Image 1 (cartoon, rainbow, N blue to C red):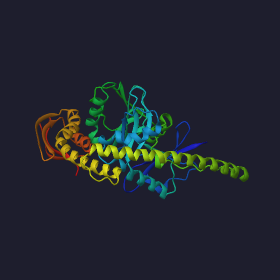
Image 2 (image 1 turned 135 degrees about the vertical axis):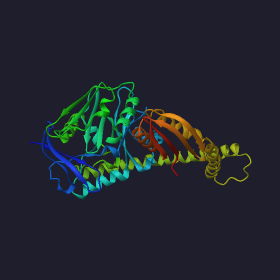
Image 3 (image 1 turned 180 degrees about the vertical axis):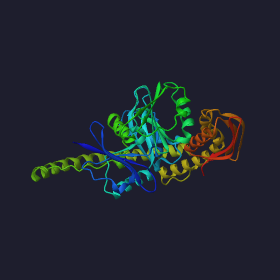
Length: 409
């Protein structure tokens, strides 16, 4: 019987994992929960590895280009303002284009975290073919959301390539925010995929006013995850520099034929390059003359021109520095624009007072509960902002709080 190995990393310091072998129909053959990574049995096929969804941001990018190479290059900069870290420190994995919106599905994870997971697996001789956010292994419903409780984390699957992972204490506020974001296409039902053990209290789910059902699996949550991996073919994080290198054996043509073709191609290439060099040399002379003319027209006070290209670059650098000093005055509007959407979408948010001085906002407000306050702090932090809770007092079924928000230094 042909089987596959599924590993779910827990992301803890002790390198605890859960694993299961399953057949082509998704039936679990063997499994273990919370065991050391080095105790996983050897398997003839490379494993499928699930990583904690709390380490991954699932989002979308509006890239109109149809050329895949340009899409890959454009995605990090299209999402730059939504992310707290520099794009150079992040790994972006692309999924399919959404049929309705036309947006590209994107999974974002810190490169340091990717490297850590890869090193953990390599240390025990495991080389995965797919590295998948565990959110996307939750079975997907055609008209609703799938929810799976795993340890202290709740995995919520809201779309074919969308969802989030959240600590169970913050689930209520997170679901309220998700419903606001999906107000155009709200879920018709919520299905909780549970194992044989008793399901966690579902108060937060019933409070949404959406039909909630519970489906159990005799082989536990690993049975659901194995089924989800088979049915969904979820987004693979092993892209770009993390893509596995295939070792393909190739046969060379007879040496003589290869040598003759190389010599012929080399002669044609040299002749072509020589012709192009002559043409480019003439173009370079013409361009240098144009650059010098543009430089004199732009900076008529210039008396000595040695290298117009370098001098132009220095002048432009000076102008940009002057412009940057001017744009500092716009920091207030930029920061206000960043925080306005998360504030407006927080359940029960009511603004009492807002002050701005020295590049920071002091905001006094009320929200529905402590979970909403904590989720608001997380959303603002993901925008690259430092958020300090100055006070938080629960009274009259509301939470009165003061936040201090400013850019990370």
